[in-house]
Amino acid sequence: MSLCVAGGFAAGCAGSSRTAGSATVPFDAVVLSVERNQDALTSLSGEGELRVETASFSQGGDLDILLRKPDTLQITVKGPFGIRVGNALVTRTNFQFYSTMQNRLYTGRTTAENMRKTLRIDLTFDDILALFTGGRFLAGDRTSPDEIGVDGGDAVFTFTGGEYGRRYVVDPSTKLIRRIYLIDNDGAPMIEQAFADFQTVGGVTIPRTITITQHQSRQRFTLRYGQITTNTEHIQFTFSAPGNAERVELK
Image (tube, rainbow, N blue to C red; front, side, top):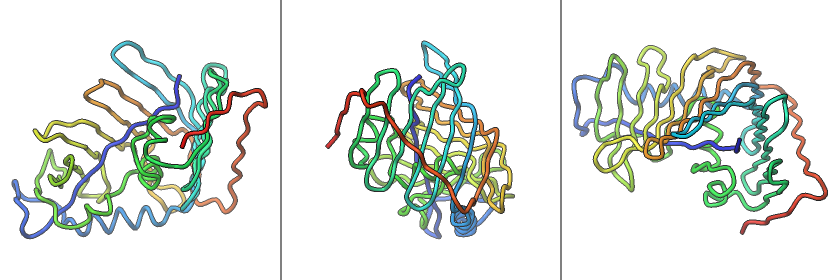
C-alpha cells in the first residue's frame, strides 16, 4: 500500500456576500474558534487505521502520526502483521521518504511538486499539518466569503475566486469544520476533506475520523485514530533507511 493522502480546501463570509437562506453562525466567530483550536495544539501523537479505496481495490493498514508545530511531521504506514510499508519525515524545508516495497529513499526540498511526487499530497506544509488535526481556513479565506448558506443545519461558506472554488461546511454548535471542498467552475466537488467523531484531548478538539475523497479519480482515504495524545513536551522523531536503499534526490 502506498503512503498517500490528498486534500482539498475551503471558504469565508462578509456583508457584501450573496446569502442563501440564513447562516446559523457568524463567519468571524467560526474563524476565531477554528484558529484558537489549532493554535492550542503544539504537538500530536496518533495511532490509527488507514483505508485506501479506489474503483479497483480496497486496502487497509495501520498509520502512525507524529506532529510537532510549527515544523516537523512524521508519517509511518504499516501493512499486515505490522510490517512497515512507508515512512516519511517532513519539515518545512526538507523531507525524507523511504518506500519499503521499492527499497528506495527519496529526499529533497519540501515543495508542493515534491510532495505530489512522493506522498501524493497536494498541499502546503501548513495545510498538511491541519489535515491531520481537523482542518483550518486558508490564509486568504478568512474574510469576505462570496456565498453564505445552510445545508441540513450546518453553516456553509463558499469562495468562488481563483483557480478553483473552496467551500467550508461548519457545525454551528461547535464552530468546527465538518467538511472542506475544492470545487470546479461548475460547483462540482473535486476533492473533499471530512472530519467526524470529534473528541477533546488535552484541551484540543481533534476529529478521530478523517476522510479525503478525490471525486474525479474515485479514490478515498480514511484515517481513524485509535489513540491520540496532544501537547506532549518531548516528541522523539526517528527516521532510518537501509544502507542498500536506492537514493533518489528530487530537486
